[in-house]
Image (cartoon, rainbow, N blue to C red; front, side):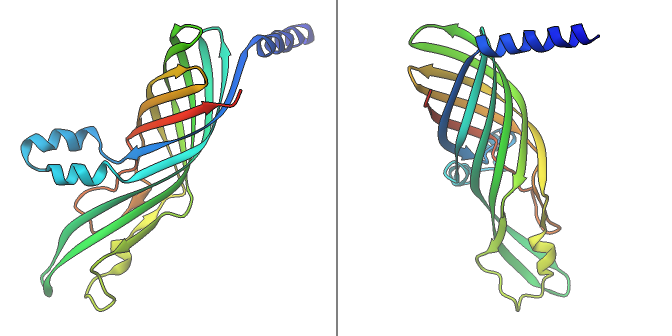
Amino acid sequence: MKKIVLAAVLLLSVSFVRAQVNFGIKAGYNSSLNLDNVASVRSGEYDLTNVKSELNNGFHLGAFGRLFFDKVYIQPELLYSMQKKDYEFTIQDAMNPDVDVEKYVTFSTIDIPLLLGYRLLDLKVVNLRVFAGPKFRLDAGSQVSFKNLTNNDPLDREALEGEFKNSQVGLEFGAGVDVLMFTLDARMNIINSLHTATWQDKPDLNSNFVISLGWKIF
């Protein structure tokens, strides 16, 4: 048994020594626009004004590492991400006049994707990759604010503000290209919302479409 364990450790050590290792920094753009919203544009439930508001509302920055085993690689990342999402909705109350509410949710999170990738094209100057893996999201001070809601409004403010969960786990997948020391990724992530509230006509959604540009330091 000891010989088997020793052999496994030795084999793993040799693999890591032979593996190609990259480390770099990256930054990019987050969008809260998802595929359901795009499909709703055709039916008129979601217009181009809504789409425009969600296409310019977030960024991320952080670091990544890559460990290559021939064409297969593992890529952990540590990212700080921030984005905003706004809602306009009317709360109907039988005892009081209807109240139009503009609600703004600012997501500040620490994202930790752990991706497994494969190099489809591997040249000296350019390579093309695909990847997928779990994404861990931690709340880092997300907030809710209102543009036209005062303390005098006859509403349950706690119900409007809701609460933020401490963490969520989702799935991330996409494709990327490397040119020399630069790397460009486009990805989708499927992850449940950190925020829940009683008064809202649709759920708060975190980033779904992500584009990032990175620089491999080594």
